[in-house]
Length: 305
Image (cartoon, rainbow, N blue to C red; front, side, top):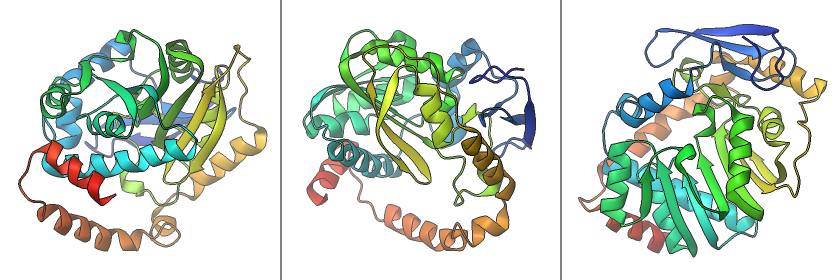
């Protein structure tokens, strides 16, 4: 297989096990550009079927969101809205791709955006429409029609076979000077458990360098947050440019980060030893949520924010 980003064939296997199922899963890093990807990459047809029916059940163990999922998604949505506002974006026609249960679509609408969404999972998209009365269609990015001032994609791009092709599609859906907010897991972080890094649902594992490179023909960076997750706010280019690959220094940095990943780094440098206590606190807090509708919970988050 050739690299999806630079088209070179010098790929090195870094994992052969799915962290969720323990099934065989080959993940490789490109020695030329540092892109980390499944090898081989699944087809779009295979993925469309999987995400429309099986994905939420496999990874959330439910066909529609539970109240704890609404609570988590609602808090994350408020963080992401603040990220947009910090970038000077507080209104406009917004599309959330991979909208899940609709929490971000609803809350961004309450914050001043004209928001709608697209979600491939039937159960989650139906829940969003019925619970929040938001405009969320059941489908994928290829089903989107229209023009937007803002597009958001949270933990979606890592599931799509061809990132640069996806950025081209997103650019075509944005108005002139439109903005794109992408969030993906950060493969270079030191605080992700080595036991829970590579799995079937994630086709690509981005560094900041490979994410920016994938977008480079169509988008320029406004600003980024390089933490456990990568959050990057892009602006649409006025005209298409050539792809800019990561520098040799960036590629070597990614390789070094992959070599250092392990339990020692995670427990100490990544403060993994604190995760158990944090998790216990989350479980207790979620267990104390009063029985209520999802929309009522989101309204309470707004009042307390």
